[in-house]
Length: 123
Length: 261
Image (cartoon, rainbow over all chains, first blue to last red):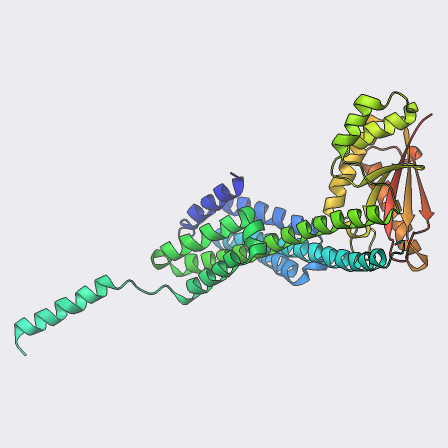
């Protein structure tokens, strides 16, 4: 079993604590995870292939950082969690766009090759 | 109406309230419908993996806990569950497209083999058996290349007059750009590891593209050399050159490995 369901379970348990005040440590941890997710999305070229989703993730991360600077730990935690899933979504959308674009390109190339082979000519 | 009738009416009303569960809130219903749609989509349900499981857990636990959550918690969990559903869809569709590309690549190999325009790529296990059983008569450099080929599983490669050719097709680079895709980077990581272990080999990186694609093909060849350089393959062992395509649509980078004589 992957670690992700475990992380998700922990996340759901943590939500039980949102109503109570989060502390600096909680906010720092959530910010680190959010920042990692947004960086991963950047490495996945989300700026190019999923620009709207990436911009949302970046904006939400900035909001979390501002709340952290203002020592509003609970707000920082809430926005960091949102930035994390926004970053993961941007990365996933980027991978989807690139994979579907590559498949479409391959299909076109293969159509040409099929036509050449069935016509008896060398590709 | 007497007191007994009123009591009976109140009791019946209360019984009705208890026996009919409250309808789930609209935003939870929307997420459940989205999740049902993903479970009916073969691209997602077959490839959703852990992301689809995460979305299931998030939506189901939200539906269960919704009425005991305060407003802030509700908003947060609806937001996260909504994103997890979208992540599951994007991840599943990405994997489905990657699998489709692999299938198309295999079909391309079959068509090219049938057309007789190139050597058929030997599966790695067959190459290895050849090395073990019947390679004594081959020149040593050819045997070296065959052994290297056997250590590059899952990569498109062939032995021809140039040497051991590892092919990076058009779709293994970002569209219109020189950067390799993450999948191609994993292949390059594997190639770099083998080249580091075979310091006596030399490498020619050929950027192949027609008139309109020659500059991009060369940029991609440069990018492959730089990637190998960054992973410990000495630049002195690597040359970059441009090569003519076999057809107008032929755009690729060939990494030609040459064993020292």
